[in-house]
Image (tube, rainbow, N blue to C red; front, side, top):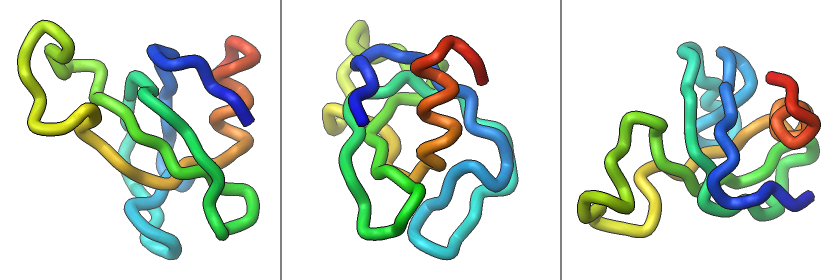
Length: 83
């Protein structure tokens, strides 16, 4: 799956994980840097910035602020213009 860099994604509770089995319970709005395959079916690794991050206007410690697993369904909805 390809997701253009800069795509803003809303991830609802249950649609993201810090690591496999650790399901997120809050809403996150992120700006995608890169996505790549995971070993967990139906989930993709995402590198992103929180939408409140000032990057690239400010210096981040790394090219992304967040690394997490996201539901492939939620990411596809973002590509299709939904949430």
